[in-house]
Structures are given as C-alpha cells and as structure tokens.
Amino acid sequence: MVLGAGGLLLRRGDHGGNHDAYFRALQAALAQGGLAQPTLVIDAARLDANIARLRDAVGHAHLPLRVVVKSLPCPTLLDRVAKGLSTNRFMVFNGAMLTAMLALHPDGDYLFGKPLPAALVAELYTRQGAAALANVQWLVDTPERIAAYAAIARANATRMKLSLEIDVGLHRGGFADPAALAEGAKAALAADCFEIGGLMGYDAHVAKLGNPDAAWADAQRRYGAAIRALGDIFPGDPRRLTLNSAGSYTVMRHTRGTVANEVSVGSAFVKPHDFDIAENGRLDPALFIATPVIKAGHKLDLPGHEYLDGPLAFMDPNTAQAIYIFGGHWMADPVSPPGLQYSDLIGHSSNQELLTASWHTHLKPDDSVFLRPHQSEALMLQFGDLALYEKGRITERWPVFSASA
View 1 (tube, rainbow, N blue to C red):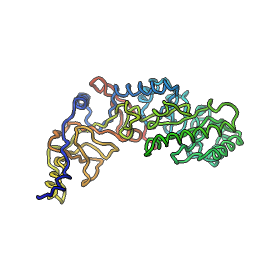
View 2: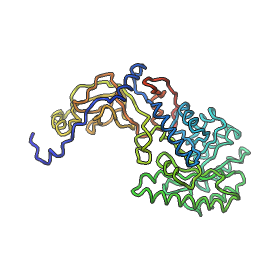
View 3: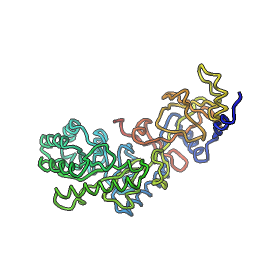
View 4: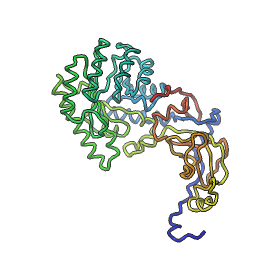
C-alpha cells in the first residue's frame, strides 16, 4: 500500500494500554464479589466527596438543595445524598417515582420538575388521596393546565399547591414573560382552589451556549422579572415562596449569587460524562458500567470486507483488535483500558458490543471493561441492583426503582 504524505498525516496514533491502578483494583473487587455480568458501580468515596463539596458550596451560599430523584433513582442512594445534605426536599418527574418516594419519605417536600398530564394527576389523587399529596407542588405552565388542575382540586375537595414554570431562556415552555406569568397567576388566584408554592426556572442552556456569562445574566434578569411580577399579584414577600432553579450544569454559578432561593441537583453527585464542564471541575466521576469481556485477542475481521482489515489497522492502530463485551449499546463511552473505541463500520449491539483496540491493549475473556455513562437517570434503571465499591471491595448492592418513563 502506497500513501502520500497527506495520507500519513491522517494516520491516527496508537492509544492502547491497560487498566491503571484504580481500574485494576475495581476489576479485582468485581471478581472477588462474583459479579460477572454488566453492572453499574458507584464509588462510595467519590460519591461522598461530591456530596461534601456540593454541601459546602450551597451551604456557603445559604441555598437549600433539592435532590433530583430521576437522576439518582435508587432509594439508598437518594437517602445517602439527602442525609449528607440534611435536606428533605426532592424534585420528581413522574407519578411512579412520586408514589415510591411518598412510601419512603411521606413527610418529604416534593416539587414536580415538569407539568404532568391532568389525567395522570387525577389518577394520583385517586390512588394516594389528597392528604398524602399535601406536600407536593404541581408544576403548571399555561392557563389551560391551571384550569384542568382546578377541576381536579374541586373533585377532590382540596387546595392544590402550584409552582409556576417560567422560561428563563431555555425556551422549553413555561410562562414566557412577566405578562404571561401574571395572566397565569391571576387565573390561579381566581380559581380559588390553589396555593401558590413559587416559581421554577430551569437554566441548563446557560452551560451550553457560546457565551455562558451572557446567558447567565439574561436568565437571572428573566427570573428577577418573574419574581417581581408574582409579587405584584400575591401579597407578601415572594421570597417566602419556593424560587427554584439550577441543575447540575449551573449549580456552581448559583452558589456565587442568584435571585433563586433554592437549587436542584441530581446528576452532579455521580458526575456522568455529560457534566464534564469547568464549573464541575472539583467533582469526580463516581459512576461506571463494568462489563465482562466475552471475546478478545483476535484481529478485526470485517464481514464481507476482510480486505479492508489491514488498511484500517494501518491508518488507525486502535482498530486492529476486536473485543466483544457482554451487552452494550449504552449511552456510555469506554474509559478503561485506554484506547477502546466503538466501530463505526459494524455499528452497535445490545447483546455483544464490538469494541476495537490496538495490540497494546491486553484483555482476555472474563476481564472487565469499564464505561462511563453520559447520563445517570434512565441508564441507572437498566442494570438491576447498583454495586457499591468501597475500600477495595463491593460492599453492598442497592436496588433501584422500577423502570418508568
């Protein structure tokens, strides 16, 4: 094969290698614990360090923290985080997790992070009863939803507590400006079956735009205008209400000064890959997928195109070796051993995912490969009990919630 200088410049470097000391110890702990199938592992020391760092940050700013249930959908994990922060505030996103949390924490303070269809809210009142839902703030985003919820409140002879969703720049819905918010607040007041819990303005977009400082300033301006609009309609200081914002992308910005009076955080406690931003630089990844190697030590053989194996391996040494793992097609990236990559030519498999590597990566069947999830929420429900890695051993297994959307 003859390549010009341009082709040689396109040749990739060899990134292959073997587990470092951390992942060698984690692999040994899994073997000792008899875990030989895809498993989601939480590092206890890293988790506790993240809890402490976030506790210190929000404590210094005098900001109560609301734990996001969907991002940590495991009762023991949620308890560990809530106790570490001395909070009973939770954000929920569906009926199934609210029901599960009410059974575990009937005195918890709950705020919905998205508006629910009225039929689902009515069903929850039928199943739970109004008394059990007294500490729930239901999120509303339009006058129409307020009217639908008013019918539910009257049917159950109760006063529902509403939180008004505001658009602070994400443009995913909610009351778009002070005038729209005033219209919604007046509709809630006129219905005479609600208590106003406060506002919720999610600002994840701030971390994803080209000028995050400008986006942050705009989000704070929008939120401040919403607070003033609410104060014009309801008597008393609006800051006595729940003024919720943040999330794992922006919590650290809020700790340096914010118009909100509480923040929500979930994913940052285990720091999946999507939350690798400068603001979270002091937090450590604490969540990994561990899965056994099924087949390794063979060159990549492309079905029907075997003649490409050599040229591909020359241009990218990290495609030379084929490694098949137990399961796959997760929202995750391989992180150990180094140099593993997905095959764009073969595609994904949920049964035996193909990873490729250079010959400098030495794996054999039954060794472990480690992947770092992009997110925590839905993925945490795919592996059964979580495995707690602590002081060199798998010390506990933590059941997760039943799967729900």
